[in-house]
Length: 363
Image (tube, rainbow, N blue to C red):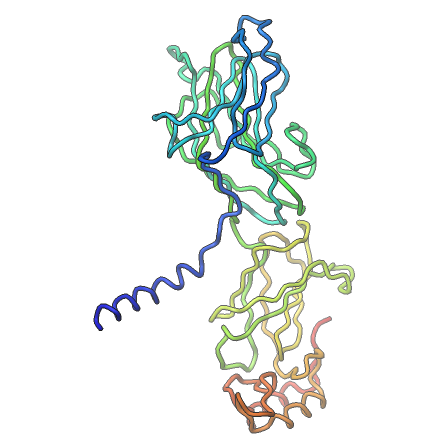
């Protein structure tokens, strides 16, 4: 019995951890299937070329290309230590050239994201005072329709930060954050190159793309309510500030015990909006001028809207009378008439309705 109770206690302790886990959006450990493609620019016309046909091996469904300088460059996936951080890694190299590869497309809604990866880079033939040759690496978040182009309208595009240039690095972990302003299909990409006639290399391993923060968050205070907040939800509407009938997005979410909420996925472009918050038997409150992603909308909601029409009127009084004296399980039980959250419709609920009678919610 003691052993069973101990395991039960451990399981209960683990529940909040498991339920709070946010699954990654995209991962790549380079352990899966690969594809082999011809590298048609290795012509042998330059002394820097390998003078032999070259084929690039990279993850299946990835795309690749280069900047067309006509010199040797390529991709590979290698499995020998110490090149792989964990298992195989994504290997790329260049001589006086730059080249790019990018993941399959990933649909992303507006919001803030975090990309983490391991990187190792340097020169194939290091020399004194120039241990890394002139290696440079850029990471990128690219729109599907823009391919590997350096011009990335509507996407974060290519960025060197925070990766140093001209340095020799052993395996180093990087985390970068970026914002997506418009919903669409994107790719995660890497660009590697050299600006001296030195062979350079870069290894990338263990990519992880995940949400970096809430698109919208806040705390809702449920007026005249003493019940369990976690049984209550709020409907959140993202409104055009110039015209509240223009609803850009709508989502319903449960509240935390303290009234907090967090929305991690809204299909709206980055910008400034008005946010409407509505509880089941509370009036709507509109919070103006909230910037998304990353904005905050908090409000205290007025209680008494039993029928959900955003006004406290005689119609609400009528529904409360019909449910008076009821408890959960009774034939006339109406949870929206239990204004104070004590699981019984009593004179206390009448008191809440009388106190807020005539109130009208925001539109």
